Image (cartoon, rainbow, N blue to C red):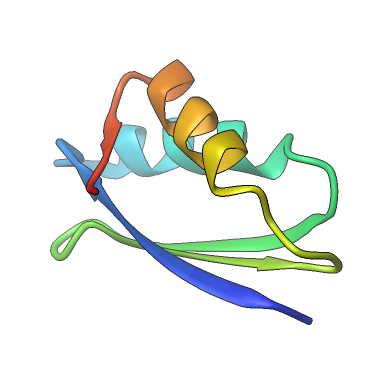
Length: 68
């Protein structure tokens, strides 16, 4: 299963983690999302290749920004 790690800017609490995780889990094929709020690292596991634009859109929908 492919795993990708992204950096999300602006997360500071468990609510942030929940919002980002919930949006990313809605992307077809995503099987797991792990978030480290301290570093902003978001590790996404999927059963197919991920579209980085879809991840960026999900993070944006949650109210945060994907680091480029």
